[in-house]
Image (cartoon, rainbow, N blue to C red; front, side, top):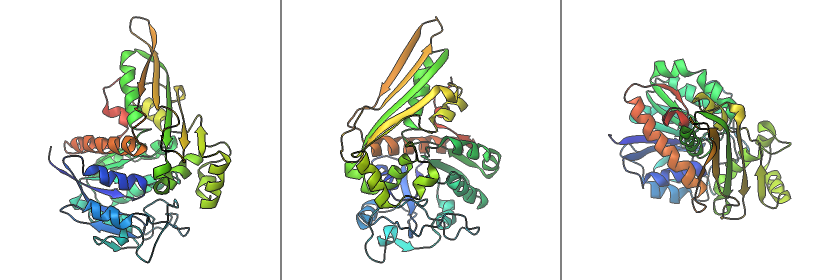
Length: 359
């Protein structure tokens, strides 16, 4: 397969680690990256080391985030509105890099470069349900022909993307939704585990993440997860200040436990024909003060085989694999798979389980 030129929207923890990981994967060349304050573009390939060094501890953030409702797209924040980490000086975030320039229209600027881009990883928090679908609209409006991949975690967003299937097909866009760890890697694992059965009764996904070393870079992720706690939702989590998030973390002694999360694994497995969405449960434990995972990430698929036996297939991630490895590795893998489909004119919306063996 020919080399793939790709862009990254959002340079928080997921975006930064994606750029770093791409230097270890053959055939992938990052040519553009942006955040709310700047854009870096080099059609021959970004100097990832310089970009990461220049922006370390200087991720674009702030309380003045535009909510993305402007009609001309001039000020939609590339980090989706989540407060990230500390800033220093006038050149914040990507704009601190010698390869970058400041901009008030980061997403539009990436769209303008899209003729040179085979794929775009949308590394943006989805604290507004329609934010990522609206970002996709802007690429379709501009006539982009290529791949869009996201790592979204909200079930209800999938329907919003499905509603755009015809539009994506007409534009020549192949969109892979929920292509991180969960949904993504673990959704795909469930799809594989289901092959042993003729009927799947239940899928249980239980994850563990230790974040101490990456907490500063992943505050947006923590904010999204808080939206799944009892008493919180997307709207209340989005309005939390950094201080309020710290208070929630302190109240839980740094360990947040989640049950029956609204993760997109359920609808993505249903659309792949594996099982009904109501048969999927997702939960996990997030420890923001320790690097070690508080629990082993496990996928359990229970079903009945063709010869009438009931059993459970279990898939486990090694505890030493980090959140970054388990999110960004699959994201780039699904990106590559999507480019292969796109180059054969296979357009539309796909979930990670649909890129696995059919059930």
